Amino acid sequence: MSYNPQFARLGEVLVHEGFVNDDQIKEALIKQSNFGLKIGETLIKLGYLTEKQLLEALNMQLGYDIVKDNELMDLDLEIVSQIPEPYATENKVIALREEGDGVVVALTDPENLTVVDSLKKILGKAIKPKLIGESVLHDTIEKYYKSIRTTSQVEDAVGGFDFVAMDDDENEITIASASSDADAPIVKLLNLIINEAIKAGSTDIHIEPLTKNTRVRYRVDGALREVMTPPIGMHPGVISLVKVMSKLNIAERRLPQDGHIALKTALKSVDVRVSITPTVLGEKVVMRLLDKGEFGFKLTTLGFEQEDMDIFARIIRRPYGIIIVSGPTGSGKSTSLHAALKEIQDIESNIITVEDPVEYRLEGVTQIETKEQIGLTFGTALRSVLRQDPDIVLIGEIRDEETADIAIKFSLTGHLVFSTLHANDAPSTITRMIDIGIKPYLVGSSLSLVMAQRLVRKICPYCIQDYKPSDQEISDCGLTPEEAAQTQFKIGRGCVHCDNTGFSGRTGIFELLIVNPEIRRLIYEGGNQDLIRDAALRAGMRTLHDAAMAKMKRGITTIREVIKMTIVE
Image 1: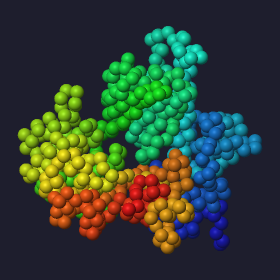
Image 2: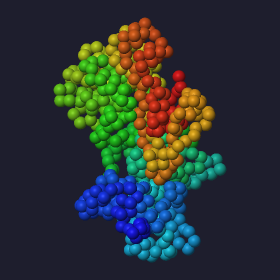
Image 3: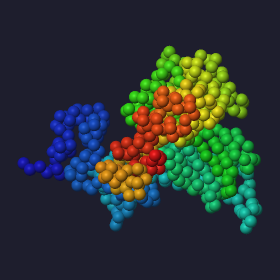
Image 4: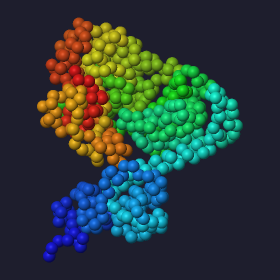
């Protein structure tokens, strides 16, 4: 009897196409009732089938077209919003576009006649069903309904706002009367900005005045993206509310101010570091979001190459010495150090940290947060730590000669010290310590390891594709045409999973400089960073650029990220 997928059961189609075997189907049938899922979803949960394979089999069996990625890129919010969000989420459906006399709708189960009939009533038009995978649908619903919620909430906030009238010279001529709910729209807007930033996994919120409106941007995966542009008339109210929440001087508009807000949301507790600075168009606020939850990183998840991982894991277990991690703000220095502490933490060691601020909470570690306004500086806290019988000390940042001097003394008296420093690479970190005012012989005798690091964005796994770089890009990243011809370049084209950026998450690149006898001698002699770099390279140091190139060649990041984040020596 000839095989026809349109008259076969789904399991038969999957086996016939070679996606699964009979034994896997039998196991899925047994476990199906436990999971409360259909046979295809059960096979995916068991790891025997991919979502793409299931869609292909359903396409053969049912005849419905599969939704292409480009159909999901720029949906009309008015059409999407015709299906209420709770209904779309519960019944796994989203409206894509109007086509002729009907609406094209993506469903995970186009054969569910109850849902199709309900959609006809909701939309008042004929339904043209298409197949879509569950994970793709989930991300699409999240993306577009978030935009719908954000847009409507901003409009609600703006709708209740009394604008300030201005004359030709931009002088205020009328001011809205201050009533009990005059600030309600501002409160709603700021709540929306902060909540959406937390949901997006943002590290920073930028609220800045432009000529005609306020621009709100989130930093996600190290890159800023614009999320909304409320009217400029709301800007002073938003700034004032941020100042009130962070206990700053509302009347002061000419000088920079710093403060913080402790927030508790339905999702998590967040510590918000607030920086307000005056600009020619008004005050700009940047809010740094620090997750107060349990630290979830491990050394194995940071992005180390195996060889570098072995070196770092070995040196952090030494009984004394200084380990410095260097890089610019936001390069993952604190994450690496806290992951190191988590790796070596045990019941026999007393670990104490002095930080400003405490970015991550570590169970079983004594963490001290400096408060300059009450006199609890790095120096004061560190002198107290010495009397607390520590084995391992983490100093949040070596900022000045006093902090560096205390770190050196800790290491020379048998303690293991971790700290960070702002420098461009590992060799320049050593010369930076000497510039701060530490004697070369003290730097040389106490330093064990210097690690420079950066974070590069990872290509989205859902939309990764081959890429042909330009001759300029090949030259800029230091490749010869012959090397480029042997390299498989990748890029993310952008999809609903990555918010059309082509990137999803970040990974670390590292430059490890071990202070060996030759480098120690160069430090004693006051050798410059070029001599130190040459000696480190001879000893096998992999530069930041080399580390980034290794990730690019494995298809983890793009050639543009390598050019953007590193320098060819």
